[in-house]
Each structure stands twice: as C-alpha cells, then as structure tokens.
Length: 444
Ligand code: SF4
Image (cartoon, rainbow, N blue to C red; front, side, top):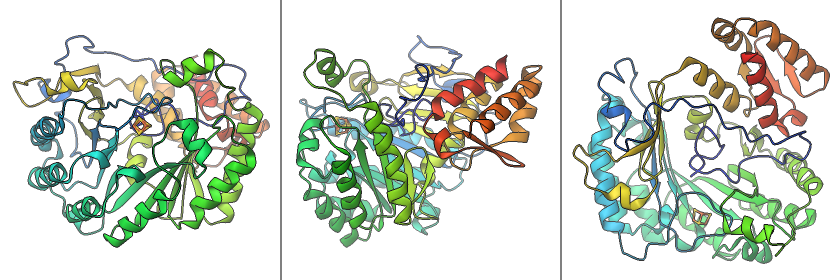
C-alpha cells in the first residue's frame, strides 16, 4: 500500500504521519517532480531504450493486489470491491508482468518481496499458487528460501485461512503484516473494519502453525471517539500477541475519502490534536519499555526485526513494482503503474502495463527524496554526503544547512552527530515539516 516516497507505508498515504499539530503550517510536501512522460500512458523505464544501462541488479519487488471485500471509508489506497470476478485475469496479467520485469534483477537473487494491497489475503489460494510458482520461475528466490531475505504478505484477519497460510509458506513467504488496526470493537466499527478483535490472535496462530514466525501488526491511533486509555489498551493487546514488529499510524483525513467528507459535513468530531500527540508520544515509551525500538516515525521492532523491504524505500534503494498503482524505482527512474484495474488489464504489446508519473533520474530530486525519507529513520541521514551533494547542486547549500542544523539542535529537534543528522523524539513529531526546512535550506 503507502507510495514509497510521499509516504511511510508503501503504496498508501493516509496513515503514515505523526500528528502535526505542533507544526506552524501544513507539512504535507508535494515533492517537486520531473515528469518525463506523464500522459503517454505507455511510458515505463523498462520500455525506454538505454534507461537502465547503468542500473545495478534490482533485489526488491513490490506487488499490489487491489481487491478488498469492503472499501473502508478512511482509505485512499488503490483498492476495489471486485464485483466482476477478475481475480483470474488479474493473476494472469500479473504473472505476465513479473516475467517482463525479471531481467532487471540481472540474475541476482531477490532479497525482499512485499505483497500489499488492497487485501492480498483475499486472493484465492489457487491464484496464490499460480503467482508463487511464477515468482519462482521468473526470479532467483534462493536467498529468501534460505532465510536470508524477507518475503512479506499483508493480510486482513478476517480473510486468513490455514490453507492460504500453508500455500504462502510453501511459496517462501516468511513474514506476515496483519492489518489489526484496533482491538476495540467501537474503533473497528468507526473505521469500518470488518473483523472483530478475536480474529487477530486467531489469524496470528494460523500463521505460526503454518511456519511463519516473523509477524507484524498494524495499528491506527487517533480514531474518533477513542480515548488515551483505549489506545493504551490497543497497544497492550498487540504486545500480548508477542509479535516482533508493530506499525502505529496516525489516522489522517485524505482528500477524496468518504470519511473526510463525513467529517466535513460534521457527522463526527475528529480526535483532538493534543490527544493525538499524547498518543504518539506514549506509544514510544510503552513499546520501548516492552523491547520494541522505534526505527522509523511510525515503526517499532525488536532489534534485528526491522522491515527490510520498507528500509529499501526509506534508504532510496531500488525495487521493481507490479500490479495496478504499484510504484517502482530503478536506476534513478520512478514510475507508477496505471492505477485502475481495467487499465492494468488492458492488452499490452510487451507485457508491461501502462505507467503514469514517470520521472527520469534527476540528482536534485534524488537528494530531496533522500532527506525526506532518511530523516524519518531514527538513524538519520549522512551529513557529510548530503552536504557535499547539496553544495555541488546548489551553491551556498553547505552554509545554509549548517545554519539550519544549528538552529534545530538549539531547539532540541535535531541531534548533530559527527557523521549523521538525527531527529530527536521531539523532532520526529515534526519530521515532515523539518524535511521541508532541509529542502528549503538546500535550494536557497
Ligand atoms: S482493507 Fe485496507 S486497503 Fe482495503 S479498503 Fe480497507 S484500508 Fe483500504
């Protein structure tokens, strides 16, 4: 789901940011984009002669499965309730696309795969089996099979079954990201989620029984009507399930969602921003007391259990993308597959779907993205490398960055280590806004 650049969570955007109440202004920054060919529809880096001549082997793959059994009213991910029984045609089209993408791996083994959505656990087992066989035929999965990589599938508790999880394990899946969102019936109802709290432990047990032990839970805070105590109960309920990884997203109101329209019509009162900030800050203390360390604005893990695939996004690595609306990044090129299933399913002369938002390599854009995603990580960004690169692109950037960092450090928002800039816990709360300041300082 979260687009890797604009958002924390791959292929989605509405749940990833910490509360922004303390910021002076709107911090959602549209990154300046150089669109090489936005409108042609058939643009795609793999179709552009010579585009990938200098690309190193790609080791990561994102696959988007768009089906959901209900459209939750807060959701702006690309997903649909399929009334036309298109799982078969989707799977065959996806397999065709995977074969076409495979040469970009240049024979190197894949290190990470992430299947998101939508609701990947809604795909029927027989289609999963076809997809997993195709992956094995198209790519080298030896690293993943040997337990040296990571193969994650997002699941919703209500659609998880034992046969599904056994099929996933058979295909090499070793990690499940479970969309629990809350353990409170009232919050689940407010979010329009279909499962009940009991289905989460049941689904995790099924995963463990199938031999999948790397487990993550997604939670949402700031749900209208939920109190701080409700959120604390959610966190403790999640901790009691013993997973190695937790993602805690703040509910935000994206334009064009049904929930945003309802909020604007006054049908409910959104959570108070001070409460959201308190929830966010308490999340870290509760989880860190339990041994889960924050490594990104919204993500916590036992040491060594960080989501490797998502780190590829945040550290500006390369990844292939398959499925409608999936976004990829190779050789400095970015693209997004056609976001509508009908477009994605159109006959393709060469196996690749139409793409939109194709962006050619651009050093200034890559630098902005590196700061934007890197500052979200608790390890921060490499100060010397960023400064050198910024100075080469924008004269005077070194001095402006130095002044900014001095001010942020004085405000206790940034830690200036010998080789890195890291946001403090207070800075993390304003990560997006501070990233904007970095970009302004670089470009003058
Ligand atoms: S299940 Fe997930 S992807 Fe599907 S509509 Fe709900 S939030 Fe969106």
